Image 1 (spheres, rainbow, N blue to C red):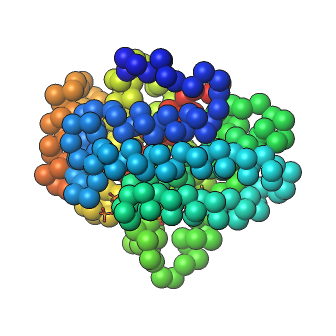
Image 2: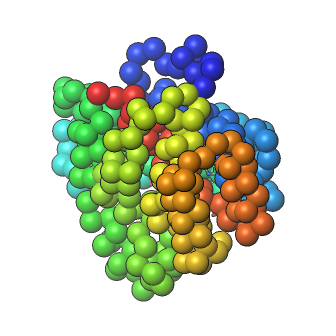
Length: 276
Ligand SMILES: CC(C)(COP(=O)(O)OP(=O)(O)OC[C@H]1O[C@@H](n2cnc3c(N)ncnc32)[C@H](O[C@H]2O[C@H](COP(=O)(O)OP(=O)(O)OP(=O)(O)O)[C@@H](O)[C@H]2O)[C@@H]1O)[C@@H](O)C(=O)NCCC(=O)NCCS
Ligand SMILES: Nc1ncnc2[nH]cnc12
């Protein structure tokens, strides 16, 4: 992306990278089914300006999460999520206040919040900040999350809970508990194959081709998920350009499909790709 290096954070700060990643993700255009600079994708209640307000509301919380990670660094991994959650929920509330109740970044707050918190924990333990150790920290902090919050719950309230009961999908929780396995396997090894904006689009395509995105399932069922996965896999195999992505955008809009979970994981991938 042309202006990318001009404003990228100079020192490695995971909260600064997280905020920057949200902005890069939002501005990436064309982006199938998602809100971007050109259109609102498959969304009636969101636009680019709303996402900017959401990012502004969320950004101060990333440093709060990092600070909390530092403060609690010497407590056991299995109590960490309980310590982080109140700040995570307060951040979600700040997002809803800024967007008039629209869910712009719930998944992004969860995943990037965990990365910031884990970065603080590593700092507090005087350990080096590396993508692999950071993901391992997130995995340890989230150990047992799927079993506790999805498997042990007889009644489903949120989209993620319903999809676990119906299809066994573990959504944002499963991805975090497995240390962002989809990002580590499907995206990071291929990060340097492309440059600039095309690099982010390539990463998004790779995510859409593999991620069991709960947003796609809640809008289009398993058939909707498969449609997007197959479409992205075909573009990756046959070659793609901006016109092909715009066509995919139209196809997803016609089907009311939005890969919101993959958009969140693109931001996670960007942060991890900046670390050693
Ligand atoms: C743990 C929570 C995230 C629980 O939320 P939930 O039970 O709803 O679980 P999921 O469905 O699994 O995930 C929630 C959001 O995560 C994103 N997501 C989906 N699939 C994946 C995946 N495979 N990997 C990673 N992330 C995933 C996704 O977020 C994005 O989409 C949202 C917009 O969707 P959209 O369909 O437009 O909007 P809706 O209003 O939902 O539907 P419509 O009516 O419009 O059709 C947007 O948020 C994107 O970010 C999922 O939505 C969590 O809520 C929780 O515990 N919160 C407390 C805070 C906390 O503890 N934080 C800790 C760290 S700070
Ligand atoms: N750009 C975007 N459009 C729609 N949903 C999203 N969730 C996260 N980023 C998004």
